[in-house]
Length: 200
Length: 45
Image (cartoon, rainbow over all chains, first blue to last red):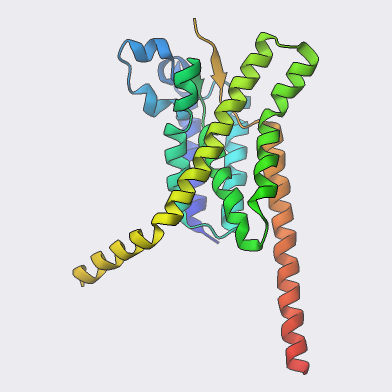
């Protein structure tokens, strides 16, 4: 049992709850293009911690907890899971946000980044990521499909599509970042060994 | 006024994650049973 991953998930869940309980957290912390344009740059660091309502908060904590359980079952390294989650949370949405200019808040691009890592980690049990990745992409777009077939190309459909693109951005970012971590692993391990040896 | 996108994972993703977790548990228990059976057969031989 990887206690570090459990502690990491619990720490972030508690942080999300504390931030949610702060007054006007959504207005003060979300990534709004208008606010960023007037110099409120801290929003790039604060938006993954902001949640609009209790459903939004509970869904994200549940999704994150399941990602943590999967990472433990797949024997993922703590450093891979934590770094993929944090880096995806801050950076994954930015390409979509820069093009579409919407106000973003919530942790799900980080959570989808963690699912990106998990979809690659399934290789450990001879489950091909090629089965897992398309299913996640389909599920991410499912709400947009449902909205399109029930309402046509309405405002709701556009919102759901933008939301799906944000999720896919997190998912792909997680896959790419974790792939990079795997490639850099020999170099990082060698460096750590060098530091340990020189310390001894 | 720009639009606001709630970045929440959604019920579908939570369900998929839960299914993946259950599936993984099954794969692991089958692998464990297989390894134990192989070990028992080797011991018998």
